[in-house]
Image 1: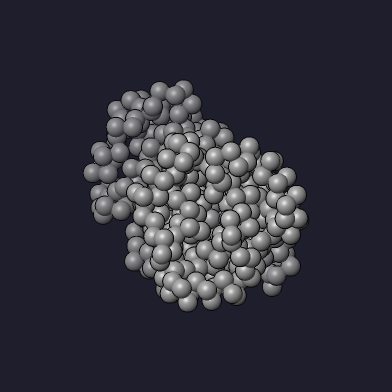
Image 2: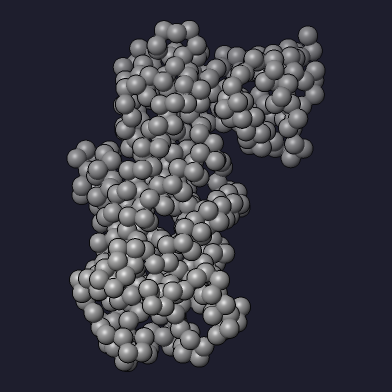
Length: 477
């Protein structure tokens, strides 16, 4: 046929790829292009069932069209599709060989488990079996090259590293706290410079997210410091008070320094994390979950130590009255003059202590949710989808916040106490005791409502901005 007549190749691999491209075009396009309107037709013909698989397949087709559409006409012509197929299969073949540890031409569940462990993701043998079953067509409990290629034919992913990419606990989910464990980057991401673009996209997402939720963040700090049994502050009453005192713009007090500290904190945390991993990992190039937690906690403590004066200024600027400070530098100058250098580290101890419960519970809950999803659905697809990822990240971060919130409240009160008229300077232990005696256990959770209220909008804004920034920086999905 005319369709086969276009199969021009220079070697056996290209000939095979071109033939497959021709067959696909003959079946579905009748010499037209593969367009964004075609996934439904392909789904029906290929007999792909299951809502999860269908959604993943449709997303994959759109990503393939986007990545291979050289002339930007929202479709792939024969040459574009052939080129995509050849490039894609070359990458897949390299990946297959790297997964096939014993070079027997077959991948078994232990090789999948070992490959994921090498990338820092530890899964059970049962979960590895389920991932294998999602690729294994003939039920032999091993995967040969043909099965592997067929599975990834309409998936822009080229390796099981995509499971890591999907489930990487990314800092894109910025909910205003800086106690999370840093992102894990592969050697390829480090050597290609992809890491700094990822961090830049995450930083931009955090800046927009924090700005969008700044009024709720200010309300949280306001309630942490000023609310008590004898002086109860409601959300509506608190906002009315702030608007009356300083107008609409007062709702964003302290946001400038809160955004400004993202860049140095992220950079220091990333560099420190890489060094701590080298020191703590039992095997070079591999890191276990507990080692990652230790390295991440130490990196967080290092970054917080370096930028902590900005945390103190953020609290002071957030609580300031109209005309009290003209800006960040004026605030720093007045604190230094009146209270000395030590004032910039007030509340440092509860802040550092808060890293362990936050990061530990955040990581543990996320890993548990991830493993639960893999045990239930990995047989169908390795891609959990945006909603599952956002849901897992939101739940784990919220649990981490809940555990560390009392320490965050004590930190904020210690940071603010010198700026409050008639406030007694109290050490951490005495302050905790006074809160428990006067307000009870729930006094340690003042301001938790606006804090939880900002989680969902913060995560949503972060994700949308992150995706747009990734695209602008040339990072493929």
